[in-house]
Length: 86
Image (tube, rainbow, N blue to C red):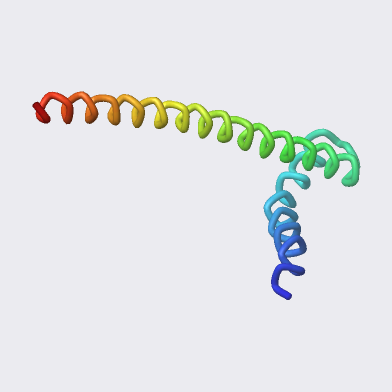
């Protein structure tokens, strides 16, 4: 049941966070509230998507680096084991 309410809770939190920005934007640009809200929400959405894309890119890059380091460490361990085996 809690999973059902989660989108509403997230939407409510975003609305609370964006409200001051919408008021400020509408006041500064002399645009009505509805278009201001749409513009601000689009900007927030673009920022969130950009951060997610950047984070996923960094995560993939770091995962590739981790696999490379693990491969090198296993190779070094294998070489050390073969030298001490004699």
